[in-house]
Structure formats: C-alpha cells, structure tokens
Length: 301
Image 1: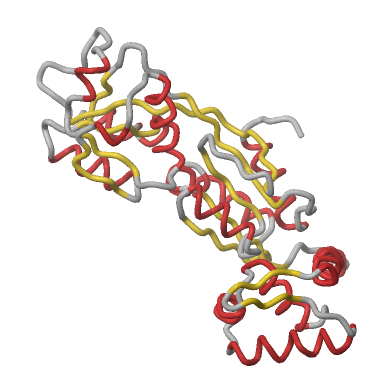
Image 2: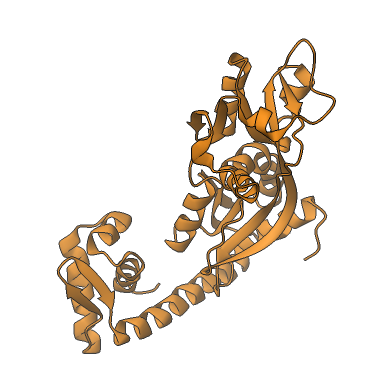
C-alpha cells in the first residue's frame, strides 16, 4: 500500500492548500503539516513554497508529484489484478454524471452492469458538468459522464451519445405549433433554465451567443439545478417556457403534460461524453463500465 504521507502530499498539491487537503482526507491541518514535513526530511528537499496564504510546488515537489501519481496508478492496477486472481471482479467504482445522464440514461444501464459484476461496489454522484470535472481532477471519481461544450485540457473526453435540447411549455388546448415560432417570440416568455455550470445551460448560451443574444437580457423566471424541477414548474406555469433534453421528455409528451415548441433558426444539438483525467489509465472497474456502456449503445471501442 502506498505511503499515506504521499496521499497527503498529493492532496496538498492538488488544492495548493493545507486546509483543503485536511478537509478532503478528514484529518487535522497540523497532521497534514506533520506528514509533509516528514516527507521533506526524508528526501532532504522542500516540497512547497509558502508565502503568506499562498502555497506552490517547488521543483522537487513537482518531481515527487509525478512519481506519486505513478505509484498510485500502479497500486490501483495491482489491486485490480490481485482481485482478479479470485476469478471475480471486486473493488469500487466511483461514477459521476451530470444531471440529465444521472437521471435518464445511466440508471437504466446500472442493473445490467451489476448483474455482470455483482461484487463491485458502485457509487454515482449526480452533479452538474462543471462539478463532475472538478471532482475528477480532485481524485474523487474514477469516471465521469457529462454534456456541454466546455472542455478542460486536464481531462480526456470520449463522445458517446448524441442529444438535443428542445423548447417546451405546458400543453395547450390548441396543441404544439405546427410551424416554428420566431426566436424573438419564444424568448419573450418567462424562461425556466438550468443553473450556471450545467451543460444544458452552456449549450443554450452558446447557441444564443451565435445569434448575438445575451442570456442576461432575457426574462429568466427561475434557475433550477435539475430537469425534473423544470418540468414540474412548466406544468404549473402556463406562460413559461424551458429548454430540456429530448431524452428527458418521453413521459411528459406522451401523457400530454408538456408540448414541444419548434423554434425558427435555433438548433441545440449536444454530445454526451465520458471523461477521465488526461494521461491516467482508467482503473479496471472504470474500464469495464466504459466498455459496458459502449456495448449498450452499440459503439465501437
């Protein structure tokens, strides 16, 4: 098992904060300082520069971080291989997914994966795309799934599934418009949108920016952190309009609770993607899950 002091060092290096490292590892800040000083004594090198409240890695610290990451990866690979000697996949898999995927796509896939690998311990974090990316970079997740346009150079992205956002409103007696409505008319309604940091809002904002329209100039009635809340709000608000994944509307459209509003000159395609830390191999459980997802969607390796 890797030296716990290396885990402490890696946490400080990720956050560039002794306080945040202590919070992540559930130990005290003096304990973090003690472990780092022991490493500095062992290697005879200062690993961090401390100037007031600012912390930065020294050259020796950057070198140790690279090797510490390699040690952690090798340990994870060794653990997987030792577990496979028993003939059954065990261990843990920490998944994270943005809201649309966590609510409408992954839950249908998880039972099949669990039947195939019953000894694997699975967890799923439901957060927006920005939060999933941050959790991966902080080592809190093994594999993430998001939608949106923003990309981090520190993460690797693999396209998985096409999606589209559509404008929806409470179902009317007249039914959905047969012809696309002008964009200006649609945007004149009170809008119900996803929160900042979500891939859904990012896609909409990017498309509007191409039309020279700023989000700040629109009538936003409410920002919600999940799609279910948007749909429920729209069912109770006859004048409001929202933008929702087509994959999240199957039941409401079939039940006549909501109706799609075609919009002239506005297309909102997006891509669901898997992501993990750039340059780091997937853990064996994460690799198994990604292969399973590809199989379910008939995607090539």
